[in-house]
Length: 297
Image 1: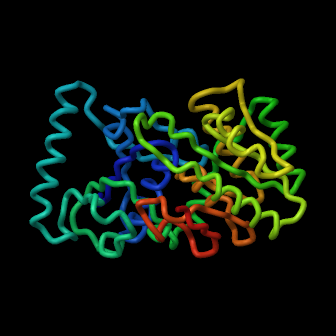
Image 2: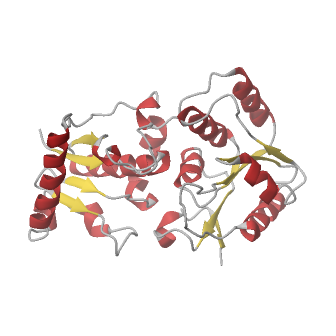
């Protein structure tokens, strides 16, 4: 059976981008989507793991991968060699298709090609333009797992009972030696924008480092609630945070595909979403037209 294979990589947000890209291409080419859920995590520097298989409505067609170390080495070398050879072939006949490092924005040719082989796609594919045609299908398929812990459900009930707006700040603490902008000015402008458009709003702040987020944002608005789920760390905390952000009626996202997806999955046109502009390597292809973008210096 003809198909395409997409490699998943990175955290939850990156996994969602890769899967959505693959789903769109499979629909366009009328073929089966196969997902490599393993090779991208064999040597992940941050110890990340697959989270997509926890989404209840999503049924991944997983590619069978070698278990032994020598088999994994052979697979990686094979992909690299086939990738080199594929560069000599027309795009529609390539067996390995890579996003490339020089052009991370939306690539029309890769998106709209009718593939004759069974290509293996490697990249981040972080542009909403790849899957605009299957947006409704993705929102049904990528319904996040609902929390079960009583305290998380209590916060969820609170979020659903008011005019809520999520604020996400990622610390990037794992990137040792990398200097990133504080984004304080961005969050100030974003909060002021949402308050102007949505009076009587209540903000819910989410972060992988709640204490640092509090020190950064506690004076930016009056009606702030800092969400710190002490009872669940690691993947469970990530999924709980993701669902609560998804449940908020409006969103201020950070420099993060994690909050990007929480906002996009629940965006049906009437939601106010604010995003930073000028940080993502995917440029203007990162934010849908109906979102509000604020320049970051």
